[in-house]
Length: 156
Image (cartoon, rainbow, N blue to C red; front, top):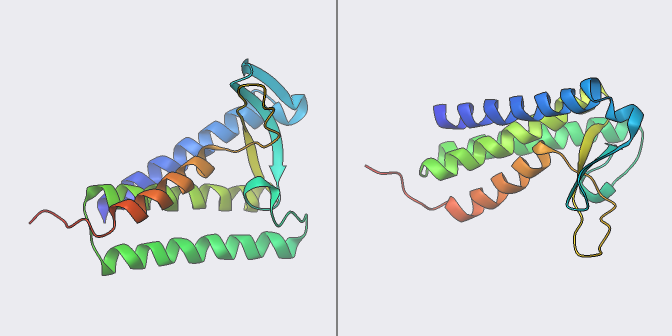
């Protein structure tokens, strides 16, 4: 369990530090757009009231609390899962990524009322209108890792 906690706390901290830096230091919430390495990487401020790709977008307290509850429930299920079926180190790291990312977005919803998304990537003539954040990357990588590394047995 220490591996899950360390991975989760580190993920959470990196997510929150990057969001603080982008919103409060770079003032991206005011500037809205900042080319970093166009077109591949741009900072594009987006307050996400829903989930990925703007799904379930609704600037209501009900939506916000439902999404907070879902994130907490999923984090609890992941913790239960890894205690019930302990796997190897990669499963634990994946679980920590997923939980740390979910908690990063929960804190955003509590502080800002929405998730602070700012990373935007485009390529090859395709203009991607969506933004995401470190927590989103961690949740995705963690979920994929949980699927791939579950069943991997812990070394005796």
